[in-house]
Image 1 (cartoon, one colour):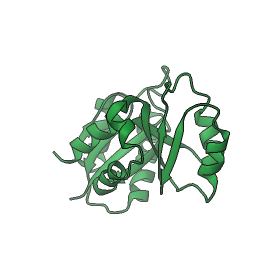
Image 2 (spheres, rainbow, N blue to C red; image 1 turned 180 degrees about the vertical axis):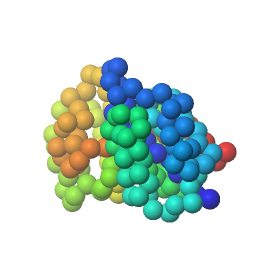
Image 3 (cartoon, one colour; image 1 turned 45 degrees about the vertical axis):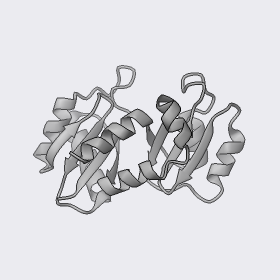
Length: 180
């Protein structure tokens, strides 16, 4: 049975959209997902499902989370193979090794349009770096996310739509969970 990773956007941030990971696991199990595991409190779920339709999984998880848990986060689902590819395609291996907490992988529903990443690079006023590989983007925040002018709003404006980010430490922990 295929293994998937689902990331939720916008839960347990600043005391808003609170979702207990135990409740999230129970919800996933009620939906027929198997071997459900969560990582941290930011909405990272690894599970197995007979379904091979990622878009249908995202839609079902979004609908049921709203219905049963009373919050409406976006879900970003990837197969274990897609996640492994995300790790392998990292354009910033030096930063991943030296400072994984300041390297973020951003998952999006759709790949940015042609020229969008270059437009975003031109809008950056700090030392941040950005690359995209399909529906995944990679951001380096050498001075930290909190001080950066490269905000989610600026990213969404240029890349066309929202995404959800995880630092490289979390990315690697999720990869390990897919491998048992």
